[in-house]
Length: 164
Image (cartoon, rainbow, N blue to C red):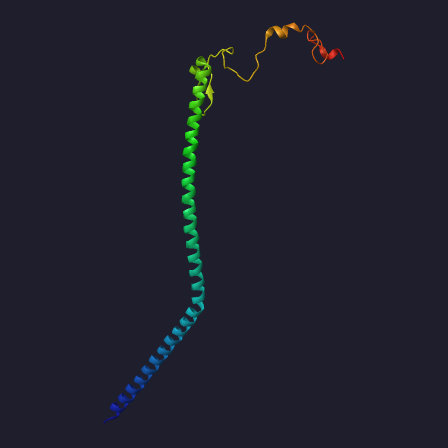
């Protein structure tokens, strides 16, 4: 064997030894990474369990609230339908009442889109025009010929402030 062969064999052995050391370092580095990840997982696992339990509770509460919302929506729809039915019934009864009490008044009774009534060309002396006001007799008002009002002023004098 010549010198070149011994040098080549020695270089090959040295290269193999460096390669094995490099592999061992890489394996040690991977093992350290695995160990760090296992520790991180061990620390995170209780947090994950806690968040998972909270998620389960929130999902149950969400389901309960959806049920309650559905129930309340149904009740609201029923109440709205009942309200509109009663409102229509009230309008029909009002129309019937007006026709019964004063047929001429009922013909001119109309409601606008706000629900207020239009009153056109109705004489105030029609029956049922204003059922809550007592009719006043003009003769009774004319019988009191006292020229002073209830405060002691003469109603026929324009400058009452000069009398005091």
